[in-house]
Length: 162
Image 1 (tube, helix red, strand yellow):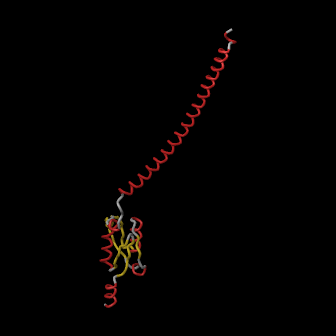
Image 2 (cartoon, helix red, strand yellow):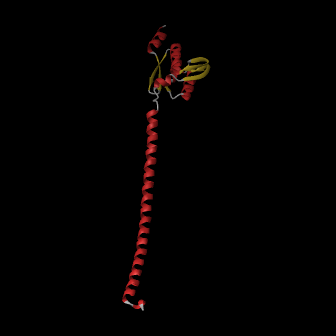
Image 3 (tube, one colour):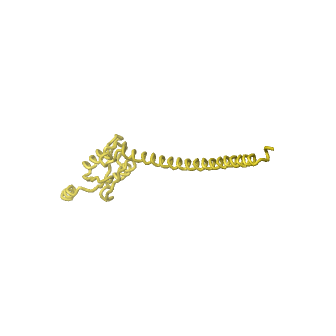
């Protein structure tokens, strides 16, 4: 009897409506949660990417900030160990070029006949250049990382005169 009344049918329909509404609301809520998770994941990945780039930039700039600049003077103070026994000066220049960041620029005619000695001592490149200059009359000019070798014109003039 109660099942056939209008009230009962209304309650039954309303109950289904409420039940469907709850289910639909649950589906909408579930889809919103999935969407929000996707957005959150995307933002997290983007922030991780930016953080990684920031760390890389920081490492690069901090290494530049704490590095000491290499000057030509510091290259002249570099100690090398070479044993030259009556060796050509060109060979000595080549060996110094291999062991340091210096480059020698010279005329082959002016240095090919010169021979030098070193008994295996440790020498600073600057001391070696002073020794060669005193023994041979060659002059050296240092610019950046290039050592220019040239004959001293006054010594050449004195050699040709006598």
